Length: 220
Ligand code: 5GP
Image 1 (tube, helix red, strand yellow):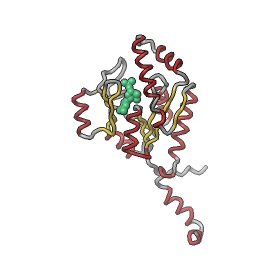
Image 2 (tube, rainbow, N blue to C red):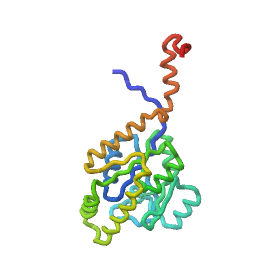
Image 3 (tube, rainbow, N blue to C red):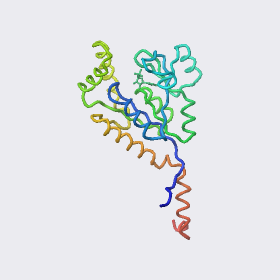
Image 4 (spheres, rainbow, N blue to C red):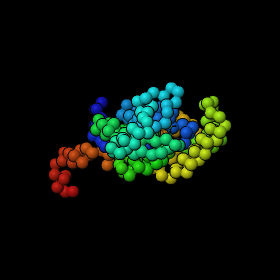
């Protein structure tokens, strides 16, 4: 069988947002495991690490002074205040990944999605994951078994706030089944990769196909 033709393409900046508990982290992990052509953007944050979180893997944990300096020096592609802490996307690693031909996955909130879109326009694909019901979201938050009623209530309020920004996204999915939702996310990525404007080698490729037919291009 002939090898499939591989053309260069512009990388996708793939944003996955959702309220916490809607399954975004699981889906991100599944995507990164299933597809070697997409890599995660690791954000910087001023919030303290949670148990089990590793500096440089889950986040770059920095103090507020450092964060402010990075922001002033233009080191972030976007940054925002989220729940009383600062979170930002370091610019250089994203540029390196795109230059290496990778797509980049962003686990950022609606403010980040908006800023990234302002910065990188049509290279950005924004996907929002909704829970099937708020009861189910609360059940998922409680099943983590770590938070008090007050903390759960605060998270539910934040979730409602986050959900109110659903219309700033290109795709909105309902996660009532994680495998199904993962399939949908992969389908979106696959289709976005095939968009004509991302396939930068197409002009020459199509020209060569036409030229292979004697005199065909003269009649076009
Ligand atoms: P957590 O503290 O639970 O890890 O994340 C809290 C929220 O911050 C999540 O909605 C997450 O998507 C968002 N977030 C994480 N990193 C960034 C970032 O670099 N920029 C923005 N705008 N939001 C982020």
